[in-house]
Image 1 (cartoon, rainbow, N blue to C red):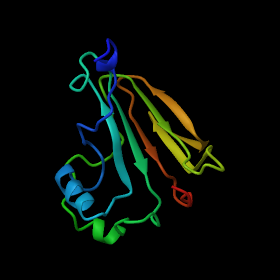
Image 2: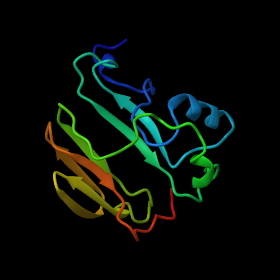
Image 3: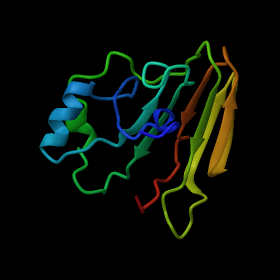
Length: 150
């Protein structure tokens, strides 16, 4: 192993704090070839790499993407006891949202970000610095469309 390899995470060791099914239910769905609209790709924190800051990466799939579970069926699956809501951390966070259409990578299909008591419209790919203690949550305002390309 090289000197700096311990600083690189290439495997998903944690699945926490996403809305919808809990991690065990997610594994069952994946085994059946099904997926939910938001899935972890990677997660990083001090438990994974000592002294690392927190970071996670997720995919948000469009409803027509193969294997998607319809929302009504998803609602009947045991849920994560930590649903997504406007929240705070005792550490700073970098949060980003990227378009997935290769022809229009800036297109995030009408996202917004709650920071403090403001909802900030974000019509293009973005990255935000969230100071420790600031209430925040990414949102999709009503009427926002969903991009057609995963």
